[in-house]
Image 1 (tube, rainbow, N blue to C red):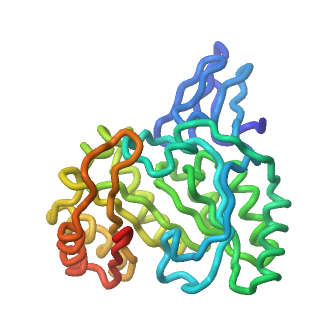
Image 2: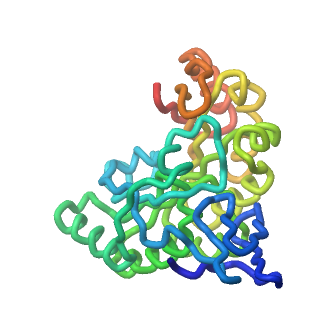
Length: 286
């Protein structure tokens, strides 16, 4: 275990986690919404520091990133824990459960990425992904510094549900971000994810100022695939920068959701709607 950052002691053994917008107020032995931070004796600890559940060498386009070092490869790592409860989660076996892990400290991760880059110059660095890497915050913060020291790049694939102060501390070490904007309605975030849209949109603006940003939205028929909603999201991104790439990905039933897969026709209509405002729109899972 590793002492967490961004928490305050509240007295009577309670601690307040300030990492994300849930602000979990935890009694002794209490777990955060993320299931990765615990109050032990009035100190907040991370339960996943250095614990890797998944590691693989991926094409950068798989993150997905289309306009950041195209054709390159990146060492992708993840742990466990997530501060959302998406009923359609594609990675639920590691985000919503405690998977098998192995320990890899930040120096070891950076050295491994460097070895890959020496063997294959197309390997450019490390991507923090799979589960929600911001709930692996302390490890990611330590690792991005080590990876940067090796002359390699850092990529974050995230739901963006993090407080502004920790985001700004991490941002200078990030070369690219793929932000998953789940929907453009608060109801969707509240009912299907357990979060709020407004906080994510605010962080999107901050990310775009400090890193290469691309955005992904999984389109679920009857929930967030309507033309008006896609247009609203595209307009929002275009106001930040019309060159922000938007990845519209096709939903397939998973985890607790059994809604039929999104049709190719709906995907095509969404692409047309977004292209009115953005210069780069891509379809995924089609």
